[in-house]
Image (cartoon, rainbow, N blue to C red):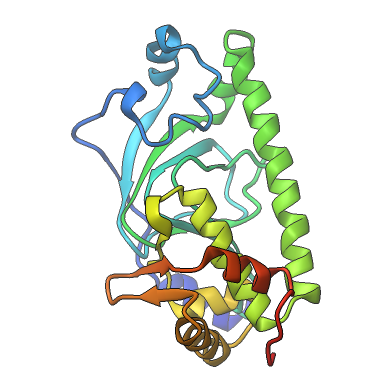
Length: 251
């Protein structure tokens, strides 16, 4: 391990995940459409007995790349960023997760990415081996996980296109539209608690470029931003045209 990476690990806050003192009923969970979507309401209690409801404070890394992949997580509230570290301490953000997203089902015995809470995050945590043994009892859960893996593959292909071919304007427009669609917020309001640096890291841009493109999008009337970490999509059609390269830009 390099000195830069060792220093990074020794100075970051300890990853602590706190159990919730009050567990909501599964049928009212915001993540009900994820891993539990294929489970009948009458069977939810049996599946719920496997999991632990938890909260994670903003800025806390609660999964480390290379650690034993002992749990599978469902995000029920908040935003999580997934990232990888290079040997010299540089970081690449590879994804953002929102309510309903599943992660931690690693192809091997170790996690392939690290996970950090961007905002206050609520999770359901399932022991991986116990969940695998439950596939025979809940065959729909296995099918649901295969569907998740297929969507992750499609998202990885979209990310390759975004980084390899799209301009700065197209990248940011695509990112905002994708986040709006996944969050499912009414009226086009996007929860955007991540920093400009996080967005730049994910999109393969500089922070200055991201800030400049945000200014352009606001000036064109596509979006409006406030100081509460939210962005309002004002013209989804124009934003979609920009994301697909149907309009001219300067980057």
